Structures are given as structure tokens and as C-alpha cells.
Image (cartoon, rainbow, N blue to C red; front, side, top):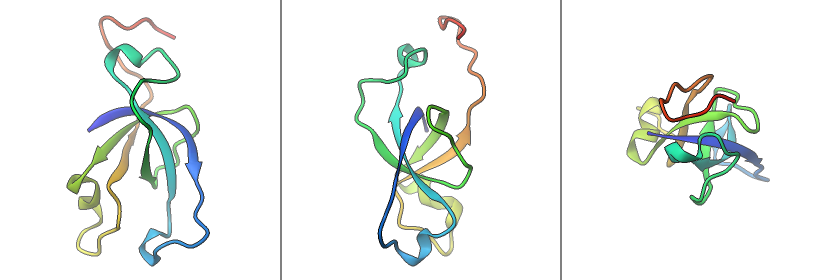
Length: 97
């Protein structure tokens, strides 16, 4: 699981039947030193969101096989899932914003 910041959403003209009920969000994964910045050096990824993350919000993202586990046995054709909305991070070297 990684921490990331949402920077937008993805719109599909036609989606897989199992992709109903959520949104696809564009998320930039962040390193510890990126937490105070709006962005990080990592390439953005697309993550499934059923929690209602807003633009600029910090989120926890599960990737790979673990991303599809909450949807078993029916499954969803996803590789990244927003598993938590983050309100606050307590990190000893982080400045408060």
C-alpha cells in the first residue's frame, strides 16, 4: 500500500459491466519527502474509488492482486484501489500544513 494524492479523474465512454458504482481517479504516489508538496516524481496511476476522494486529497492505494481482493468472488478488472481517505499524517520530519 502506498500514499498518494488525487489529481483528477478518468472518464470512460463505455465501461466494463463490473465497473459501475465507483470512479476512476488519477493518483500520484508520494514518498515521505513529498508529503508537503502537491506532487511527487512518480508517474501517476489510475485507481478505482468507491470512497469519494476529492481532488488534492491524500489517499492510501492498494495495488496489484491485493487491489481486487475486496471485490471477490465477483471481482473487478482493476489493478489499483483507493482503500482509505487520509485526514492526517503524523510524521516526525514533516512540517504541519
